[in-house]
Structures are given as structure tokens and as C-alpha cells.
Image 1 (tube, rainbow, N blue to C red):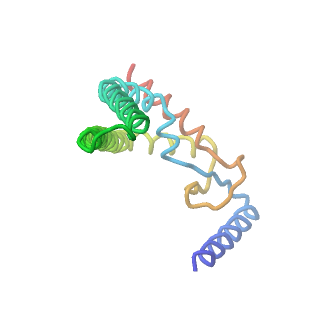
Image 2: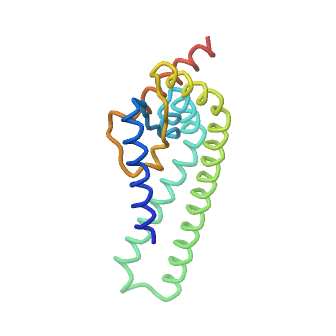
Image 3: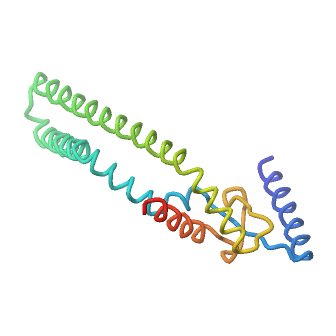
Length: 174
């Protein structure tokens, strides 16, 4: 069923492209999220996030190393350990895993929230950038790159939109 849908979509796109080519229609393909997250504004936000979560990252690295050394020690000494020592080591390992998982979940949730806020904040600028690239390039049709099974790289306007977005945010910051 999925294959049939893909074939129908591909055939429809082919027909649209053939009809557009016959009429001299200029088509572009855009990955809007890629354009947005490759922008200078996204790099600034990423640097801020890296700084904000540096302590959590260090703590997670430390916990991972502790867990790894505990597992190594357990494997090396398992034969000579008492049942109480084994239980204590297993309990310690589980505690470390829980702490590590909590940090990872907290950071992941915060990152997702920050990314979502960034996308919402930049939606207007992204729309303006797309509109300007379309006007400058004389495009008649812009397709979402994620919805197109195949397209020639020459049709991709994502880098142009990123460049225009950088230009617009630089002007806004001046």
C-alpha cells in the first residue's frame, strides 16, 4: 500500500513537472527546517545551549565513566566477590544508570523545547526569506523537500534561503 502511494505521488509529481516544464514554470525545492537550522541565528542558539548544558554534559560523562569502571571492576572481581558485594555493586550501577538517564531526559526535553521556541520565533523571518528568494529567482512553484521522493540538486533552494535568512537577521541585529 505504501509503495502504491509513493508511486502515485511520484507519477503525479512527474506529471506536474512535465506540465510545468512545458509551460516554462520554474520549480524550486526547499527543506525549510534545514535552512533554518543551518542559519547563523541557529548557530548562536546552539552555542548558548552548549554553554547552558555544559555542566549537565560533564556530569553525564562522569556518570558514564563511573558506570563503565564499576562494570569493569565487577567483571574482573565477580568470581571472588560475596553475594552482598555483588548486590551492592549492582545497586550502585543501577543508581548511576538512573542518574544518567534523568540527566539525558532533562537535557533532551530542554533541547526540544528550545528548538521549538527557536522555530516559532524565526517563522516570520523564514517566511520573508523564502518570499524574497522566490521573488528574486522567479520561482513559480516551491516544493517541500521532505515530500518529494527525488529531485535534481539544481532545484534545491535551501542554501539560498539560509543565506537570505542570515542576511535578514543580520539587518535586524544592526
